[in-house]
Length: 84
Image 1 (cartoon, rainbow, N blue to C red):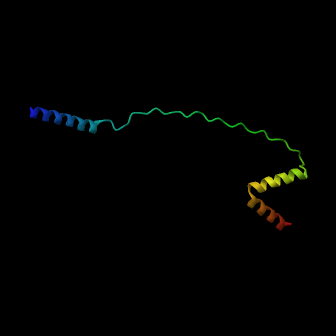
Image 2 (spheres, helix red, strand yellow):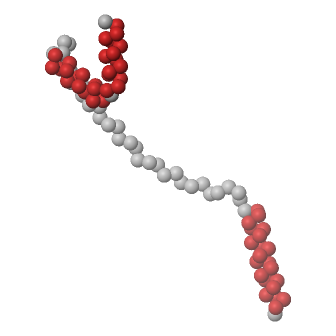
Image 3 (cartoon, rainbow, N blue to C red):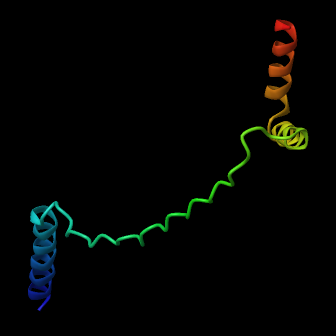
């Protein structure tokens, strides 16, 4: 009885080892999940400004530029003053 049990376990172990060795090395292909298409943002319409902006508009533009990047604006002003 013990011999039959031993041979059965040995056969199962041998089958498992052979299955692990000879199984396909490639994994089964996985289905690629498509991401939903990205929505393109609508372009903002650019307001048409008059050809010659008024002093107030120039001042507003200058303030906006200073708020965005004051270092660059200050360097440009210094360079402009040096040229004058």
